[in-house]
Amino acid sequence: MNHYEQLVPLHAQSRPVVMDADSGRRDYIVTRALSMHYGERQVLRDISLQVAAGRITALIGPSGVGKSSLLACVNRLTDMLPGAHVNGELRVGGVDASHAATDVIALRRRVGMIFQKPNPFPLSIWNNLAFPLREHGVRAKSQLTEAITTALQEVGLWGEVKDRLHAAALSLSGGQQQRLCMARALALQPEALLMDEPCSALDPIAVGVVEELIARLRGRYTMLIVTHNLAQARRLADDVALLWPRDGAGELVEQGPAAHLFDSPRAAVTAAYLRSERI
Amino acid sequence: MTSWLASISPPSRRDRWLQWCLRATAWVVGGILLFLLLFLLREAWPVLRDVGLMPLFDDPSWHPTEGRYNLLPMLAGTLYAAVGALLIAAPLGWACAAYAVYFAPRRLAAWLQKLIALAAGIPSVVYGLWGLVVLVPLIAAYQPPGASLIAAVLVLAVMILPTIILLTESALRSVPRELLHGAAALGLGQWGSLRRVVVPAARSGLLAAMVLAAARALGETMAVLMVAGNVVQFPATVWDPIRTLSANIALEMAYAMDHHRAALFASGLVLALLVIALMLMAACLHSPCPARESRRGRWA
Ligand SMILES: Nc1ncnc2c1ncn2[C@@H]1O[C@H](COP(=O)(O)OP(=O)(O)O)[C@@H](O)[C@H]1O
Ligand SMILES: [Mg+2]
Image (tube, rainbow over all chains, first blue to last red):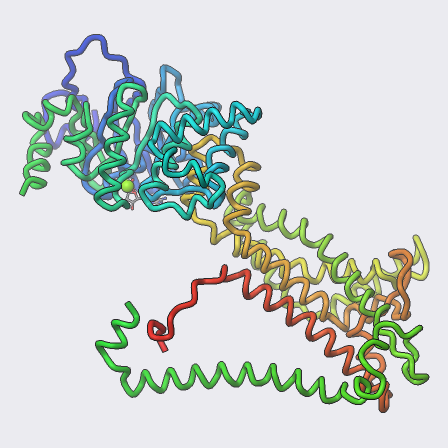
């Protein structure tokens, strides 16, 4: 089918290895044969990814392989990246999300995103949460207060900021800013969270706090977390998917439950990658 | 970090030269400004000494040859024209800049930018000519005499529009991409993102654009002189002629003597202080008051 399989028989199956026996599993995010270009340059090839509902899936792979780009496909942020083209199928929460006519606003409300660098708006802490809520039609003050308080409590920020909700969000520390961004996403009551190396810009203590938070949210949200930190993937992930570059474009070489993938990887590159990281 | 650099490697001979040149340039530029102000003050001094400051603002009229020096009608004319021009040009400029940065196809945006940069470079007298030949007759057909406050406002608006667009565009382009992506990822629409994310993030640049445009409008002489009618009066309506301070100087300096001449310099001083105050505001707003670096840590 695609020439990579003809040339390099790395694995027997035509699809990336899916090690899944759990029959009760429901996939929240599914891509089929998804590929992506920036202009002429292909960065993702034939990605068929499944992200199980309510579980934490770590997306790992070397830097530049297209992990962030794949995340951007899922919430259609690709629509606003100049030169980005996506082909293939994308289903989110059982709904086809790969058409031009897809309601991306609704999609993005169901699928929140956390970025590598904390990106609070240059507004007050309160308005960082209130503004998106208002834009999505939450107008009543009592509802706003309720949603904001809950979200801030959920990320463990409430105690730290409750006395200065009207201070500038940018006056918070990096770790607090990242948790504020998570609260901002959670306030919209999404079903899934995409996280693009959410800890890579934080100091070790803040990393611990954010990781703990992610673990605490397990089961409540479907989470797809990009990390190039394998130790973090081990700590957090229920499932793991590995992207690996071939001819300049990222391919999904293996995905499955974290324990299987880390302990008995099926694909040779996975084994090699895990080994290289251990050294 | 910079103090480290300084303490580890003492500045070489060449570095010292560079520092010296930069410092000298800064002092020369600052000195010229100071010299200009002192010069204005010296030339205006006779009238300030003999007549005083207050008569410049509460004499019955501007009849300088008869010892009446009220600048207020012209100060008002100057401010009305500048503020009116801003009121018209600012929304147009914002819309145009936002379109170019966020909505226009890449090719069109590049083309627009070149055109606008070109428009910003057109000498003001050309705008004046256009106003005189096209705009004033149009206005006169509707409401004579044509040469009026509204003509000055429109010509100034057209003139400062490119400045506003260029500066606003650069302010918008300096908004970090991550913020826009963050807004989009929350499912926010374009209007909401513009109003609540882009504007706060670009605020200092947007304000600076307004201030610089205002300064340009306040100081503009030639184009306004050609279309404003130059009658010294408080305009009752926008159709009335006005005279601005800068036009007044240009019109009367050629024959002014003694206190009349000094009064013109005084009006120049008022104008200069007005513009300098605006510029200082712009400078302060553009770099949102950085924490003062300690002297030791500076790279000079
Ligand atoms: N907006 C863009 N335009 C063009 N190329 C891009 C853009 N963003 C990323 N790329 C390229 O696409 C490849 C994948 O990038 P990315 O998805 O950021 O990888 P990762 O997140 O795995 O490090 C990289 O080679 C990068 O240079
Ligand atoms: Mg990345």
